[in-house]
Image (cartoon, rainbow, N blue to C red; front, side, top):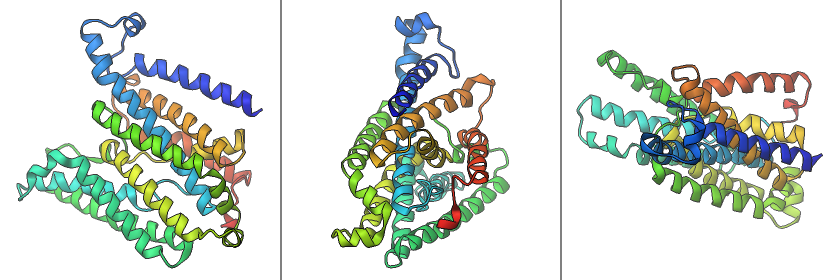
Length: 328
């Protein structure tokens, strides 16, 4: 069963990859995919391939992060943004626009927007860790929710000010709801390093994560401090996810639904969950990005598409009691 499911996931990934090469803002003929020339060669090599690579890597990162955090916190409804990473990154992005629009000092920082978003996302994570450091994993979850509310409220205030003063400026809500468009090879290379590190640490520490997912008491008896491990993983995952947020905005639901689907299809331990979640997450994000750009003739944010697909899955799981929230 596991091997058959794995084969289907690999086939689905290959098909989605080919579709991702063909479809987008500009449809590339199949003949040009294998022998690109002229403008199609430029689009394929400089726009389509790096964008597709980034979609694959972000899909793998968010899905793997969700799987690991759900195991560590023993909660299937936890996502990679639980530490406030997403709202912190969004705050950094919109603050650069505000400095530019109001012609305030340091408005040149708009050219370093991804780095600012990365810094504020990391700051939000550190605040969450400080809040929940001595109160266990429940403190981390509650602290993350509070930090998310704070930074989300600040983002709302900034967007309101910008809309009132500059109504002619297009709203930034599309960016805040996820968009993988022209990202370049530089971002693809950085993301590939993050993805390799995340997958390596997740697989090499899979037995430890399995132990932490069972019981804190058993972990202590084996000489493992569960709270220190959770703080380390939360910080590491947040740093990786922060970079994703800084270049693609907030892509919601993926980190929740993919590990849940894999648990239903395959089950297994952390190593299997991580490997198959990364594969399915990449496939779903590739297909979502195709729908987001080009299929309907206009842009649709990724989070909107993923929410439409993901919410019914989670509702179905709750109704069938596959997810028992009372246990948490």
